[in-house]
Length: 116
Image (cartoon, rainbow, N blue to C red; front, top):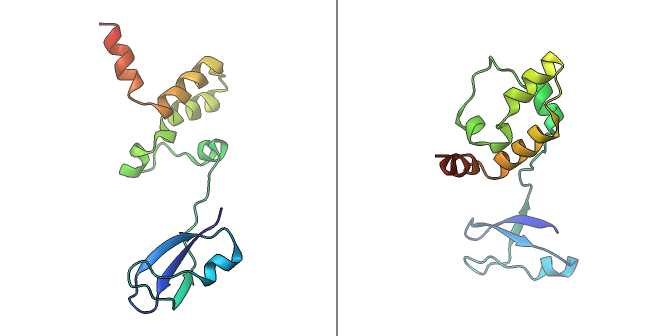
């Protein structure tokens, strides 16, 4: 469903609105001042990079910023990259564990606490 971004010419307020039907846009008003003189903006877009592309573009020597370490999709990236370079198949079990880590990184800590 299209979510559009608008700017009010009256108060310069930026806001987003879900527009389901063409007629809804004509009735739209600024939630801040109630103005109807609006400008539709071109919003930023996100591009999804496949894991295959991430592996091909991964450079272990490159400097990584905080965003790299905060992105859970990067968990296991180096191991997969290294295994690919060595021609080793890590198997379905590795992929399952990796998927679990990426969706719930804290599970490693909880599981290890049970072993104590």
